[in-house]
Length: 70
Image 1 (spheres, rainbow, N blue to C red):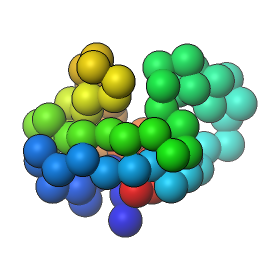
Image 2: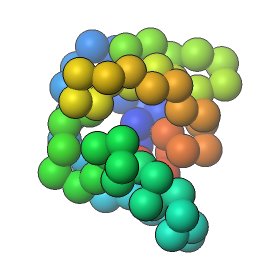
Image 3: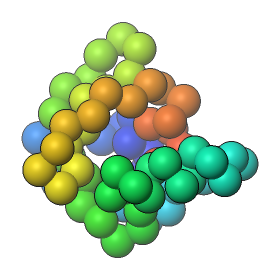
């Protein structure tokens, strides 16, 4: 299941991140978004989702939400 399919308010553990871009992987890692870390969808929006990672909130687009497997 990917992050786009996640329920709002439920804490999930990231299983994998499937991108073909090393720079994007590095950026996500710097935010604390990596395998084994917990992530919670705060709100789904038309263009993406608001997620909570390590006491911070981020707005991610649908393409990135589909790349994060939980």
